[in-house]
Length: 329
Image (tube, helix red, strand yellow):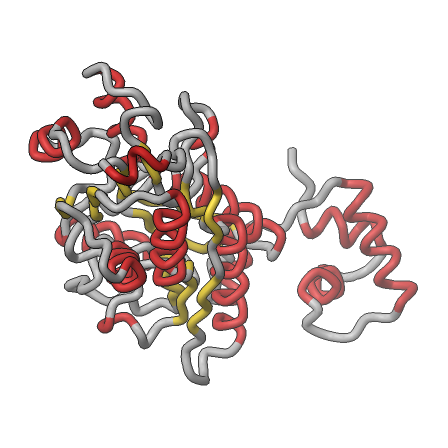
């Protein structure tokens, strides 16, 4: 049977109240007494009961992580960083998928809030119909209606500018853009910054697609049309879907068409050719979000903090420079 608080008290020769004070730091205890209690805890392998601690303190010592979906490889990597940091800070983690519609998100949020102290949240849209009442840190999709919460995001505008600079350096002037959903804050910021930085080199076409490797029929048609020499994808999953379509129809990447993604998910280096992309600092995003939430749980006053982390362009085999004769074509 697991050791109890009473077992530790008996082994250390103290009261259960003293053991509780040592564990919770609720009252001063002499160094000698603390040493005896800690030795008994270690010898017996005692672990405090989470449910008992919750009843006593009103805290769950549990954080929630609410993601739109787990099919996008970016989110499992984010979840790992959140889970590791939560564990280091003494919290458990409840993970839930909100789905891609507002009703499912509302239901997932309502269920989660009953069981956690705070939430790390990637909203499904930039204008969610509901608001969490627990302390919350929003990741990435920080729309105007969510500025009341602490947030962590990548610098998506910088990402768009870096994409444009890479396109110019490679010599491409005919571009197609598989942009992300219209209601995605990050997709809109990337697109606006990309087009502004390109100046006189504007995309020949722009098509909004979901953040998925399963591309809609309209995207397939665009990819197989003659025209652009380079495709910018909304994220790496979209880029990998485009790569699959192009290969299936005999188009070579990058010989016939260059391709750039966004995120730098683990799969980006496993496809052939490896994917040029903009790398988001996913581990830093997850860690920063949990640390912000931990601070907010300790002090719920004060203005919200909005962290914006830098990104970088990573050149790999899916892009190439155009030759002088191609530039004249």
